[in-house]
Image (cartoon, rainbow over all chains, first blue to last red; front, top):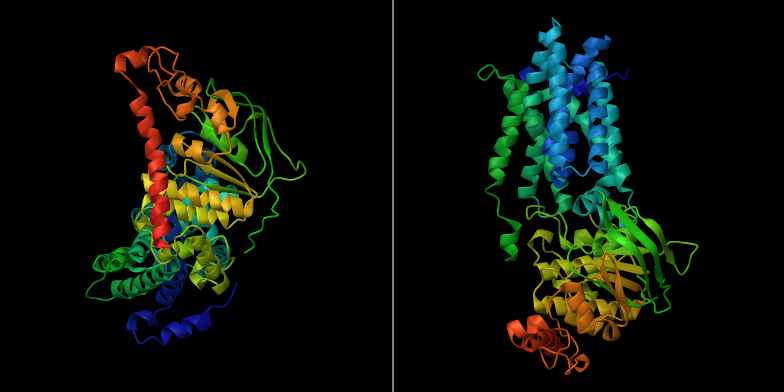
Length: 286
Length: 296
């Protein structure tokens, strides 16, 4: 297990009382790893019009917890595994079936929620996990989870370096992308798998109700503010990171005392509202 | 970027290509050839299977039969110009960024390489669209977007260029300009071109070979010999008159157009329709040429 204490010492240097507590330092580190991943993937989620997909994966978290209960596997393991499985499954069905993407995702969505409900309705003592599933709980993030987030962060960084251009081409026209020699199916599967993992961690951070916002809001804001596809990446990153930091710190203030996940999303939504006032690129060229 | 005349251009031979989907024959026993270095156009009504045949060629659609290239050992380097992109206006993707997407390994968020930008500008100059470089893709007009897509495809330095109704939804002038640029690029680089098009006057003007399809091959060959009024009547069910000298005055109906019998009598002389269509094609061609001459 890596030792994060130098990072915590660094965070403690920030002159804010709330960041002196160890659990807050852990939460901040977790969020600062998760927010950029979600924001940047959000750019691609928007390009692929996959907001509904990420919502369905988020809800698979519920069934993941239920499955963990059934098989006596810790929910922290069963949730991400099941999420990835559902994500890859949806991509596979979409590729093979003539049904529209919405319909396939809608069916998967219903199936995982129904399965989760069915199992939970039989089991007892899952209230803690259920609450966590609904509202998120970044404040209880463990060192092990942070270490995993760090690994995921590195993987995703490499993925974005190699795949950003390719994914954009695939989003624009998969047939054209293939004619450019891009292995469309492979990229779609890897993207769905990574997205599912990030969504699962986002469910822990902000809860299933807000998981899509974590992906979409920074990317949508970036769309309004950026003047290029490259710029969109950096704006999404900036909005995601600043919202995570400000949201966590604000939620810990005594005069506010709100849920950290919800506050993070609210700050991001304020960013979005501001971005609507930004001058449109098109207007300048008109 | 190399623009060479000594380019390898494959001929494409469709041998008994069949596609059967959901209990229906989409394509039946397609046997046809697209000559090397030629401009082959697939002509036929909607639902005739033209796009499906292109998808077979691109490897996107499973089919029975065989598609052979003249250099049987390898697949030609292929570029594809789609009809449209799934692009919404909000995406801040610039034209020069779009053209560098597949020309650099560096992700766009690290910026564009100077060489990639130079290449993009060169490609845009090939389609007379340098002025669009910093525009958003979503803000382009239909004609501008098709030219940028053509530039992107040319960037592949293709041996085989496949286009699926690239001029659909483009105004007459834009359509004419697109064909002219395409023809110039093919002459300069010598690739084999296969496209689907519904603009018959422009097909007649620019294509070197046509394959008429309605689930199966109805005819193929040089446009003048193939696109007879009789065949077009058979394909589309409406009188179309592309070449006045192919008329058969002795046929009943319109004295100048042998394609029509009963319909001609019912509608009066259809020659006007036919000639109007043709004259639009040629008048536009003329007009664009003149304007371009003016700009030059």
